[in-house]
Amino acid sequence: MTADHTTSIPIPDATIPRRTLCTGLAATFALPFVGPAQATPLSELTLYGPPAGPSIILAYAVGAGLLGKVADKVSFKVWRTPDEMRAGLTSGNMQAVVMPVTAAANLHTRGLGVRLANVMTNGLLYVISTDPSISSFADLKGRKITVPFPNDTPELVFRAALDKNGLSAGTDVELDLAGSPIEAIQMLLSGRIDTAVVPEPAATAAMVKAAASGKEIHRVIDMQAEWGKITGLGPSMPQAGLALSSTFIEEHGDKIEPLLGALSKAAATVNASPSQAASHTAAALELPWPVIEKSIPFSNLVATRAHDARPAIDALLQAIARTQPKMIGGRMPDDGFYL
Image (cartoon, rainbow, N blue to C red; front, side, top):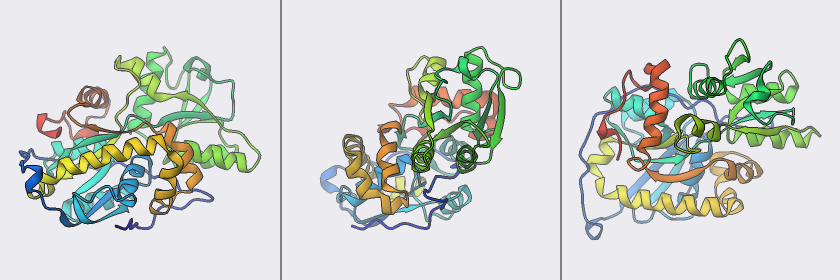
């Protein structure tokens, strides 16, 4: 088995994932069942994901040869932009793709035939800063905070946390919106800003790069913990997961359980041995191995079935629907969204 990859997004000294938001939609399909004894591996399967934390699980599962019951040849490829992902799903070239949960919900509710199979991270957003004195939202009062992706999950979650802590955006805290995590960390490293909200592995990459130049950037607030205070469900923010196309579900339904089982095993190994995971995945993800290794403990990587994670998923989608319903297709996804 080989781990193929497409060209990723380079920045000086590190590659940080770009925005993983797209639009589309999904219809509901029944899951065919074929007993494991009857299943024959596919001849070939390609798994797709962004150059970000959850894809470490995919790349490791491929590189470690854990998907033999799913296909004779399995490869992993990075998708770089939302347009690329959308085109791949629409054309049928991509059938098993890691994407933001919000994007999968959008695709489902718009009728594109996508269902969420699992959740692969329980959240990887952090406030990082050159000021180590920051330790809580109260310490953000009177400051300017840079947040990537206007009107997307990071901003919406951060605004909700401000409100929970009795702070007002624009009055108590000035929001400075950046186009991407790359832009935010470049401004942080250049000294143009001092505090930003970024996902992994961007947070780790910023700290590693700063250290290399004799500077310090600190991880000061865990946004998963802040989100847990809002939902009451604990520090769980299901940001991304594996989505399957209707074609894959209809034609290869018997491969879903072996696939999810292999990803669960991969997630356990990745979390238990970040260095081993980094050695298997650095080339495929085109991320420096020290960044991968150091980011894994902060990426909350999991492989939880979508139906088991539904309470946490619904809490996130409902919060987004209150202010940006278009992000999830204008309405909450129906029961068929959750495999």
